[in-house]
Length: 68
Image 1 (cartoon, helix red, strand yellow):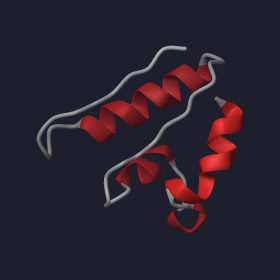
Image 2 (image 1 turned 180 degrees about the vertical axis):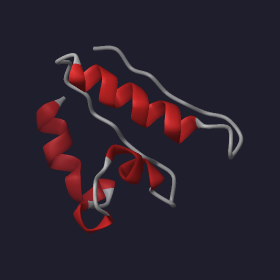
Image 3 (image 1 turned 135 degrees about the horizontal axis):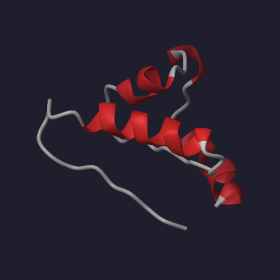
Image 4 (image 1 turned 90 degrees about the vertical axis):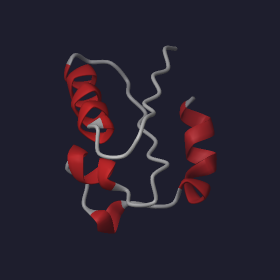
């Protein structure tokens, strides 16, 4: 399993790059797990996920553990 982490100051394009890379990898048939630790949760919007479908990481702990 490969892991990619994006860090840096705000406004440099981390979310845009992360969402684009996730979409491309998924399109190529790879399994992708994307976790957004930013309180603004803009990564979901970049992936096309409606905010109404987002749940806090703590609520998904069991499901994430099963998939890993």
